[in-house]
Image 1: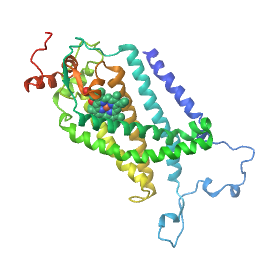
Image 2: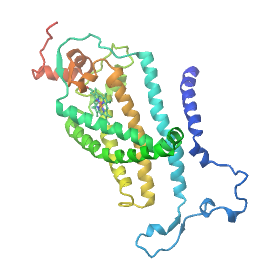
Image 3: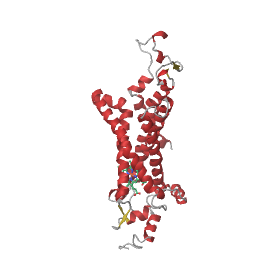
Image 4: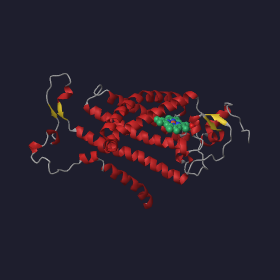
Length: 332
Ligand code: HEM
């Protein structure tokens, strides 16, 4: 048990140590140096940590009357410390957990082998909706990483000139791809909601861990989507809506809320994006390396009949009842 805890704690501590060595974090916790001001009057007013200072302005934009807003410092430390740590731990933690799972369990293979008989799983329109969402999300995740980790990680590597060009393009792409991403989320919601409603069989699927740890011997019953996929579907739909709302609040600053609301919108956007990115890393793993035959479903739209029988037994029976696949396969 202790060995297992040490196995997980060691990479997490390493990540935290690397993160704390980022220059921007060091700046946040600066200790006074030889040239630091010694008298209170020499310290700029915003560094004296006073309470909120609000003056008066005669222009219509009243928020400009706020000179000091202490919550800004909390938001800054959230952005520089909490958010970056949560994002790093979630995404790298998921990659490490998947690597460990792959080493222990290996690829999930077809227990009965390939039958050679193909079953249609997703039509062309469904695949288009999936890849529209997927490509937009991946572009937004990568550009989001540039926005979040660019200053501490990329400036030392690329220098200010290249980084500012990259950051500029990343921000443009991040804003632009939000539109196809939301269109994709809307389409998959409409197309797949009826197959993603919770049902009793989902509880048994979760209790049996989807059969993932049974060495391929247990295949809990599932309809067109199993409980794990339903969780991914709802994470994408609800997470996508939350990202859309908070993202547009950030794109149109102060259109619907004040500074406090902007900071809250940023915090929600950042945390939801980190959780969804970790979920999608796991999804991509199972759709490619993790499970034999899975990619075909979204690649050519057809899966082997044995894959359908093993992973989605009830869906396969429904296809048989509708006469879309034969009662027994030619080789049987
Ligand atoms: C290279 C990236 C990706 C690959 C290889 C991939 C692969 C797949 C595959 C093979 C399926 C069908 C599974 C089945 O037949 O049961 C699927 C379904 C799905 N994908 Fe992806 N996907 C990718 C990226 C994404 C992204 C970025 C999103 C959303 C942001 C996403 C959302 C979904 C959803 C909601 C489903 C239906 C539910 C599920 O099967 O989990 N996918 N994907």
